[in-house]
Amino acid sequence: MTQNKAPVAEVFYSLQGEGQNLGKPSIFVRFWGCNLNCCFCDTPYAVKEEKDKAINHSIVTLQHEINKVSSDCKHIVFTGGEPLLYSEFIENFIEKFHDYKIEIETNGTLPVSYFLGTMVSLFNVSVKLDNSAVEEYRRIIPFALRTFPKLHTNFKFVIESKNDILEVEYLVKQYGFKTYLMPKGVTQDEITQTSSIVASLCLKYNYNFSPRLHINLWHGNRGK
Image (tube, rainbow, N blue to C red):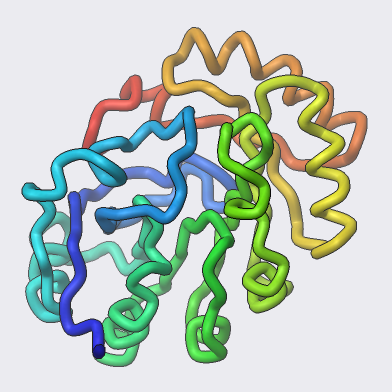
């Protein structure tokens, strides 16, 4: 069935808080729904709560909401939840409104079509590690990961302890994406406690460090 509509939990204008485009003014479109259930999920309202509050947008009504939050910004971040559950909807949006640069934040368990692979500016693939408490067979899907284009795909791993680096090293060797390590935590205090561990791992293994700017600035408030 063609995806003419998709459930959207929120649309807001903010700074990209993580990864390669850290600090970039962006319009965030957060889809409702996810195929994983990570123990540290910081957006439960877009995963397992508030389904009745998610607005089932068409491409045209979503573009209207995007213009309401900013008519000038041309950088969109599709996030979730898991936005690739609605990959056909996203493809249709890009075809109709092709003046935006598109960034997608995904858990990497769903394959990317050739069209998305060529039209999306950046994929932030946050593959879940054992610290997510999700079974490995559900969070590591080799076929899906091999569909992401290497030239504009980054890995972004949530790190809880130095032991997580073993999983990271294995995945980076398998897929070769540019890699960011990010401290686990949904509060400033939690992130502060983990940041020194993550920084030392970045220096030792030559990975990029990503803070969580939106939590440092706005303490994880919704719509920021």
